[in-house]
Image (cartoon, rainbow, N blue to C red; front, side):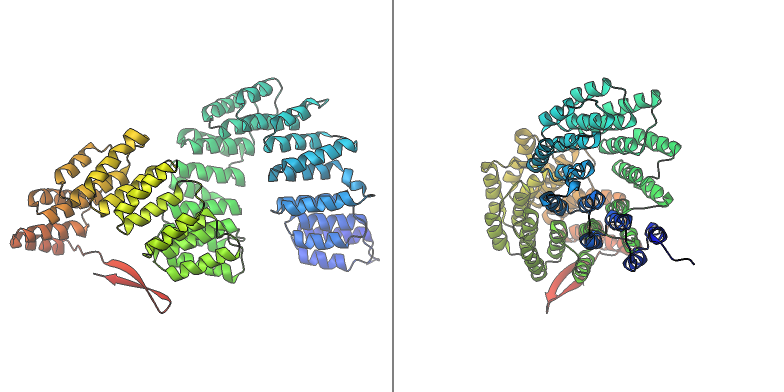
Length: 624
């Protein structure tokens, strides 16, 4: 072969880069004796674009004469890969170089302004805008649109409008940015007026649709979408992302299915963004099977889509499917690991959550508020105070010990391990931004039998100006229930609706039914069941049955037990409680008949389960 020239070297390197073989391309580049500007531009840009900013930066620093292409590639690379601060530092470095002409490159300036927009760094964005004006940099449509977008994202709509009005010719980029700005500020009438004043391209239709959806005006979005079709404007992936997202937020299955069918007709239904939103739409409309079926038809997946499927599988208790997706993923983000830990914890698999957290630690992966709070919750569910405090120590080491979510999880841990005083001490010390810590402490008092303290805390909460929600009342009513405070429970239950305009839910009725049943107010418990706006579940009937057993109401107990067996033929508690009622009344033959019926139907009493920590190991104990 004749001697290889720069063109040959560059062609070989480019071929390796396009095939994804970065290591061989880098080896070839390093062995190249005479690198030209194109060679450097190609490798730096390719590594930065692929997300390998570490190696891109090494090459960038080695480049003898840097140009606008590589400066822009590095700034954009940092911004796109979660390090906007480094992108700004790099631009500052560029700006300090007196004879570097790239500092006036409109593409670089547009990238840096975009970084400010994503960071919400309005002051920095204004400084760059001022520098552009002072140095007489030529404004092109991309740079001006970036400035409008920056002001919009930072909430400075007045300056966005000023920049827009300074345009000699308003193009689709600037129009789209301003429509988005109006929509972000809730000024949809002005956005629509601007939209109607021009001949919109598909991008402007998408901006208007996204604005309607973001402001929960899904009906207007659907109306505009229908007009778009009538006008013969072909929808694209962004169009369907907005419409399907709107249908998901409203649980609008009918329009969601129609949009999905239309996307399929246009050949974009399997686009990764559209597919992810489609799955979310089906899931939020309660059609998990349709979501899973659609997922199985996809040939390509990305991390966002796979994370959505993990969450969907966990929400439907398909633990093995969630685990399979996780284990077969080509790459896992922090969100992926968090989804698994949260999913395991919420579904009652604390040991699996802890094992996964330990694996993250072994791989030296970054943890955040979500992973730490979830794994502390896992420790709380198995009452392992030692493990929970170790994890909190890790949170302290990385500066997250004062985070409200983590502190609240630690309060829950203390209370579930019986250390209520430690929980209250932490509660008193922490900053409380909303009702969540109050609710957690209320539940802690409730589950540990501190009824009076729970009611006092509820009073403190109201005096502190914190509005209670449905979870608050679950804690208060649960505290009344555990402590037999019937009058207080009834007063709080009726105050929910009359004073706080909160409709009682299943859990609130359940607490009240259990409270009345325990206290022997069985007629009142039955009245609550009759007055509920929904059907009573088995647990509510079991509360009444236990009350019948405690207070010897054989007739009602028999009727309730028969009803439970109809609802759940394999429920062992109904048989056990009914046998106990007959035995308490001295009707031994009836009690024996119930036990024979239980044996004949092959009904076994469900075993109990508890955890105990022995020699720094958590043991699971089953009891019959």
